[in-house]
Image (cartoon, helix red, strand yellow):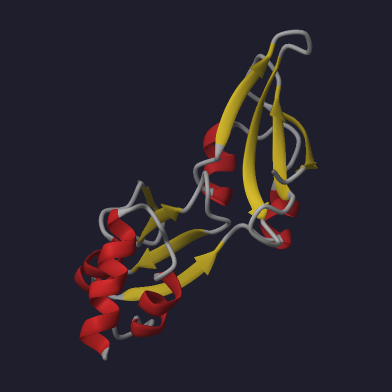
Length: 162
């Protein structure tokens, strides 16, 4: 059965679906699993963040279609320390005026999209955070940046379903 699930996850990953993340996460154990095991299940990270304590945090964003971004921290010893799903209310609240894009990306991972609003002279990054049902409304969290690249505010919007 485990072999079948691994095969199914590989197939779904090949066509761009992240339905197997929860299966992979259950197999990984903080304090036990190695960096090699994380890469076997999740692949290469989209970004690596070096931490002051010598650990590294790997970013696995499921944007633009998924609603999750996993930050997986590996200790200096190569052992998994923790797995955090960062698209949540606590992380959104940490985004503050004056932050720069790298700071926001470190908190929330890669956004689903970025667009420049000519009339407002702002850049808006957005993350898909909720899709209640197939064809349903999509909810996005947004971060606005001024022309200096600093956060001016955050928000949410709903894109009606098809």
